[in-house]
Image (cartoon, rainbow, N blue to C red; front, side, top):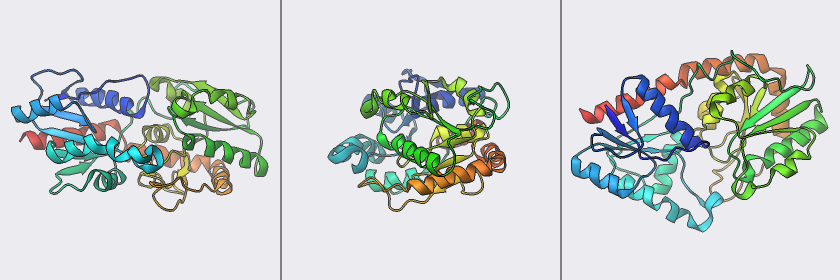
Length: 335
């Protein structure tokens, strides 16, 4: 089977991470994935959207068109332009696609709400997966500690918005005040968009260590040197960095935002702070003290939570499970 995925792969970013993993996993199963147009594809598979010329070609040639949907644009992150930013994906959804693949139940709810409910809607939910050989508790480990008893809280992202970093800083300040100063917040990733230049502010904080951009292949070695993964992104549809951290045996400290409650169970493989409402229309209030308390609870129960994180990743979020589910969906369309 030959799968055409019209997408420009970049060095960083969740979507590029998915595209590279998808290609590797599909090709491991004996199929072919390519990003540049060729006439001989069997399935046109797109991440949200693609140029209309490829959609028209697939329609004319009678090739199945599959749309993978993650999150959507909404007022709280995009302002008044959000309907325009969703328009192309909505047109493709209703006039071109034969099948939809949602990253999570949350992704499906967002698509129905902001792109319009599709009836009928031949579809399935396929969560992202991680390469469990690369992202594993065993392997080379970076030493991030300044002393043997120091706690390492870790996060990794392409930091673009304030909700990705400022709640973490506020929680760390509260943690220093009420629990311990013997910890470090280690950040892997670059700062772009509205956070461009933010590193200068972070460099002045005594509890922060900046790693800069880390290649996905090297990320596991840093995560093995940490104790827990912190995450406050607004409404994540199915974050790769969470699944990769779990695969390395890291407990997750975050919010019941987006698809997080579909991946993390409080008291089992981490702690999620309950939030109210959707966050679609305004930024949510953030309970800094409660988040800091969750950081301490995870520190105390780290070993138990870490073991569960790895087990859940093996059972639900392996790259093999993900790619096998995609192949099954594509084959059903070719029949």
